Amino acid sequence: MPPAANDTIAERLFRVNQQIAAAERQYGREPGGVKLLAVSKTRPADEIRAALAAGQRHFGENYLQDALPKIESLHDSPAVWHFIGPIQSNKTRSIAGHFDWVHSVDRLKIAQRLSEQRPDTLPPLNICLQINISGEASKSGLTLNELPAIARQVAALPHLRLRGLMCIPAHSNHLEQQRIPFRALREAQEGLVSQGLDLDTLSMGMSDDMEAAIAEGATWVRIGTAIFGKRG
Ligand SMILES: *Cc1c(COP(=O)(O)O)cnc(C)c1O
Image (cartoon, rainbow, N blue to C red; front, side, top):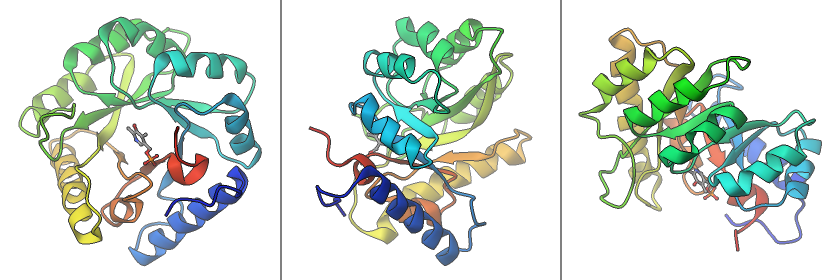
């Protein structure tokens, strides 16, 4: 539901955290098992400061040029930065140097570059592989067929830590329909774990399908609109 325009970021964050906790209880999830990634793309640094003051720590950004000045101006804050947008090859060095997580890796070549370019002074970069779970021609992401071989190769890269999978499913307004692609992502992850990969992350669920994602095992929900309001 769109937040009322006069709510503060702190109030919206409080409400989203309450909704996450309620969904954890309803679907038998461990309390605190679902973490909130506040998607701050296109929002100014002052709004991120307001969220930080309200206790939020993890922020998601889609566009490197939009993100870098904010990361710079908040460098002495406890913010943790996640890259969640499409990745061009010529942007990997900057992403590897400025982010703690990348949720949107959809090609082996991008993973190889991120590993090579991750500075030695930083811990391994946390990685999720993006899956085109609804098979939409317009969306990026690996197919489930190509996933197992690529996951094994990414898991072997030295400066990355493969954590799990991410998806952005086709839109639906119905909870039961929303659950279907999220369930497929969880089953794909369980398949990789049964083959010996050590994965703990499912990045799935946005403002309009968060409950369905939590029901199916999300560990990160990526929420923009419900925290910061509609993007212009
Ligand atoms: C914009 C975006 C979100 C947040 O979407 P809302 O509907 O505003 O919550 C989450 N994930 C990705 C990859 C996005 O691009």
